[in-house]
Structures are given as structure tokens and as C-alpha cells.
Image (cartoon, rainbow, N blue to C red; front, side, top):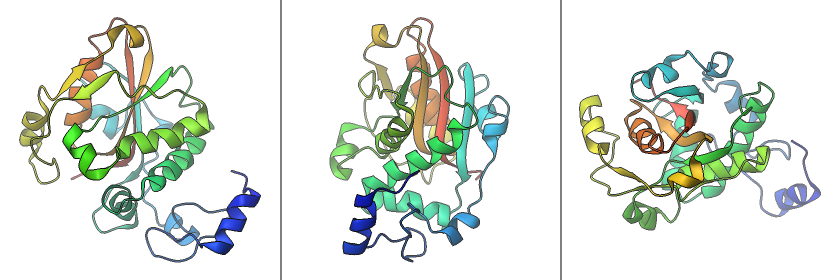
Length: 232
């Protein structure tokens, strides 16, 4: 990515810091410094997007086309700091920057070929009011800026928010999101290849519940992209 004059100027006025270690970023860096990037546990799933540990979560749940995540999500690690900063420290721009970095890497591998639109996994209205934004939509914004793909953020909605998925067992996660989504606009997505975008995927329960609603529209194809994949 080219560094603009304005980015360099803003760096002088208000230096940008690495979200993981707090060190100052150079004009060419975004989100993480070179040191933290070097230690980032990248998944490499994009080299086999049809058959990898993330894609296998969705086998038998819905007909997934391809799936990948940028890094393995590990609590209290550099990868976790990206997610914590995005979700809990009111830094939506981190999601956009991370989405751009992720998209630029995947463009070279042809991951977006045939994709028609991005669908960020929606938050319940109450949770979005509390946070002020949907972190998955911010990631999708960055991906859209890098790829030119449109964002469809009003084709499916989350009906309620029972409790956070963070501390639940795999069975409880599935129960927590069952019937949590509703398709809003089947005509808009009919015969489209949609890329579902999320921040972190653990059991895949949320993505699967959302995808099953989208698949009610005729001829829909679904792929999945996330920043992080948690193996725990």
C-alpha cells in the first residue's frame, strides 16, 4: 500500500502506535509494527481455502465455498490485542486498517474471485448501541476499500443478544445463536456469492446460523473470512 502525504503528515502531528506493543509505527505500517507482525501466528488457510480447519467447521452446516482467517487468535497475544482494541477500546479504525491489510494479502491469491458482495455478521441492536459500531462491519469496510466489493449490511439481522459467546461451551454456543438471525432481503442476494465477514471464529456457530438464513434465498453461495480463528 502506498503511503500518502497526509498519512506522513498526520504521523508527525499524532504518531500512530502499534496496538500490540505500543511502539510508534512507521509511515508504511498499520495496526502492528514489524516486530509484532513477525511474530503473528498466521494461519496460511488461504492456500487451501476449500479444505482447512476453519472450512471444516462448516461442513454439514451449510455449503461453504471457501474460508480463511488471517491469524490464530490466542488470548493475551499480539493477535488478541488487535481484537481487544477493535472491540473494547473504541477503535473502529483498527478494523478498517486490518481489513485492508488482510484484503491486500488475499487479492494476490485470487481469494475474492467471483465474490459479489461482503456481508458483515450483524450485531444485535442493543449490543451495537452499547459499542457504537459493529466491528465486523468495520473490517468489511477495509476489505471493501481494498477490493471495491460492495457491503450488504441490511440483508440479514440479528434478532436478539442472549449472552456473549466468549465463555460458553461449543454446545452452549450453538444453542445461544440458534434462531438468532432473520433474512431481510432475499431478492437482493439471490444468485449472489456472498462473503461473510467476522472478527474471530471459534466453533463457527454464529457464522453457521447466519449463513443458514442467507441460504434461504435462491442460488446463494457463501464464503467466509475472519481476522482470527481460535483453536480453543
